Length: 418
Image 1 (cartoon, rainbow, N blue to C red):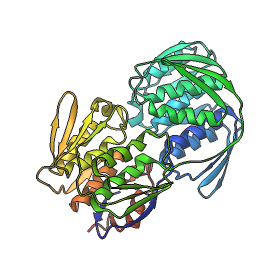
Image 2: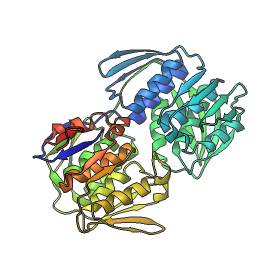
Image 3: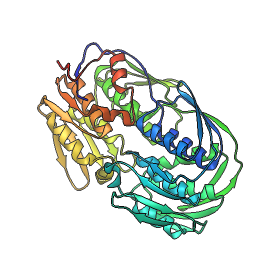
Image 4: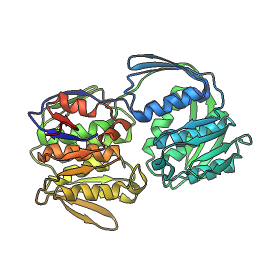
């Protein structure tokens, strides 16, 4: 699906979509733990739907009421599951399958098969599970020998490995494991928050995680809005003003909530309410520093600010971006240069500053965060760029284009391009 954008007069209110990080965790843990859950405010992104389908393969019954759903689990080990392109669902489900002693064949999309998962597989193998890597790059799991044996895991590639181990030991009911070289540790707070709501108590000391006690109970959760999705409209708003975003929990444990602090420190143009923010046009934009090791999902959209800012944006620890849904390091450099930004790459950081503005004719990414970031750059620049593979947006933010329309952007779809 290709689109072109016409800017128009920007003003309006949107509701941030549900945090797929929370949704996937609640859906999967409910299905594997046999604890019923009521989830409200679901956006049904592609990744959320993947977790729902996995739950159904595990014999969960799911009742829907508009954006709400009731999960009634009755766990059975699935013979086969499909994880699509969802790295979160893939990694968490590996841990959960092992905890349940399942013998299951995993398959998914080729783009996910190439993303690293061997560290998690090695740790679960230490605990007694067996894995066979198939020709498609995914694994067949035989976890009949799984145990609560203490293991060590390297957390330097992804915090999702650690989240998978937390799910593993909590399903087993007890045990401890040690994490070395952890990155993106704030993402673990989402997992811990989820488990605590399910009645699981966790203790961490010097990288050693222990499952202390469990008091399982049916729960109801209003899934909060997603800060990484809201960030596209926040970035747009500092160049246009007049954008209000609702359904954002100011006290959220989401690590990408830091986007508010980063942008307010540089611009002072975000007014914060109880569950909403208002973004005004920035008079001045100071230099912004983004740590990709802690907030990898913010790096693409924050790089857009650098395209139009003399002070620029500096992205540190960018090697973390090379193992996401795509090589986002290369994607960011290419996108920013296509709009004329001055891009400097050192061993320590990428620096993006305003250069001589260019108007690219066509930009295409299969990575949802890259294509949404490019669209925002196109709107700010007024470039008239045609954007390809926009269907990838559904992975995290199905209403993205509709929300752009709600604030005054005109969207033209192929084959009716302007």
